Image (cartoon, rainbow, N blue to C red; front, side, top):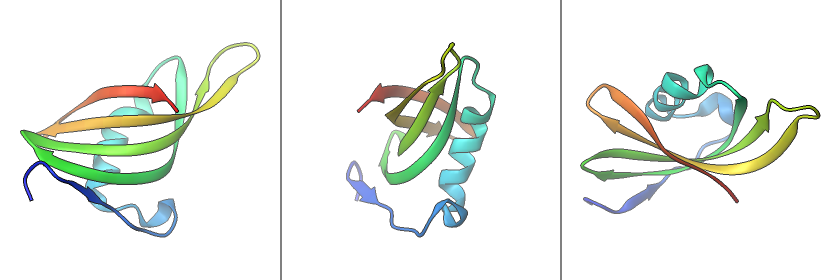
Length: 89
């Protein structure tokens, strides 16, 4: 259904669906200033492209390191990915 959020269910990060893994690894592995560990794939929304929703652990590279849980939205247009938002929850 166009515009609806489709919830995703899987067991652990090793079974992350390929489309989620592609979105995650295309952007999150190369960020500077923080590292991210995916905890949960919430779902995806098909609109003008595809929005992927994640819950992740963010570790800010500070002294001492700051850890928090964030919601990340990544959008896909064709073969291009962009981070829409990273918000603390």
